[in-house]
Image (tube, rainbow, N blue to C red; front, top):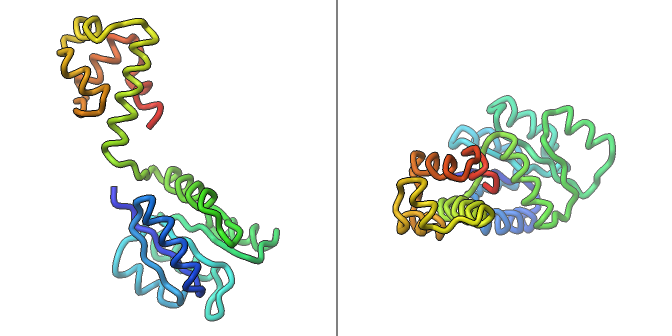
Amino acid sequence: MDIRTLVVDDDQDSCDLIERILKKDGYRVTTLTDGRKVEDELRKSDVHLALVDLKMPEISGLDVAQIIRRHDNDCAVILMTGYATLDSAVSALRGGVVDYLRKPVREDELLGAVRRALSAKGLALMPEEELHRNIGSAIRDLRKKRTLTLKQLAKRTGLSVSLLSQIERAESSASVTSLYKIAHALKIKMTELFARV
């Protein structure tokens, strides 16, 4: 899925750093150094997540968050600040902000907050290959746990050894019907195949 993020921070270096981190992780990123331009940007394109600096000269991050919420109340907003106080954190959370990060942001904290915020909205950035890899390794692990060979699993599912092998190695995507047959043969709920996703 193409997840679009908006970074609003009057410090260009901070925008560049966050943009680099997010793009490396596969997100589409737009940056603004003037919070007053947020409304125009939101009219141009949908945004799934906004990262907003709390203290900016022209407009506060809380005001920007309110503009975003008015325009699209499904857009997740994360506030960032170098001046964290309990009052500002409470105000932010009351204003519908989903998380609050201290600046300078650390890559792991930033990505963790972004993933949590998107996950709460039912959005995830998982390339297809990774999805296939996770399902394949889950099938392989569950099969081995039950000490079944590929041949035995093929016999139980009616699927070919070759197809099962390709699914486990993530060389082929499994149809819903194939996944159902595999789950049934392994005596598990189909959802267990997606536990690592």
